[in-house]
Amino acid sequence: MGFRVEIAPQAYADLDAIADYIEERGSFASAERWFNGIIDAVRGLKDQPSRFPVAQESEDLRVEIRQLLYGKRNRRYKVYFAIDRETEIVRVFHVRHWAFKPLDFGELRELTDDVDG
Image (cartoon, rainbow, N blue to C red; front, side):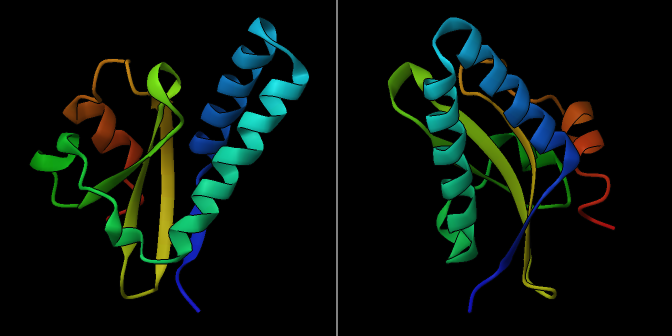
């Protein structure tokens, strides 16, 4: 059966902003392809989400944050998520381009406040 995947409002906002950026520089079709592809990848987290590595940014937190990398070469995006094994829910809370500076502790703490209860 697998885990249930929930996408936080902030992650949806991130996805929309990235798709808008792709559309501005390319086309609606390319933005739609990217959006549908990353959503499919996120849905795939329902099966064995722990196969993805722990995000380096989460070292100082009490919550284990993992990341899925989506895309190829210089068009890769980090999808940050947490796994709640008790409720069998994967919570996706942030998406950003891999070349952006890593999340600092404060940003990650703010994004994950609802993850660790």
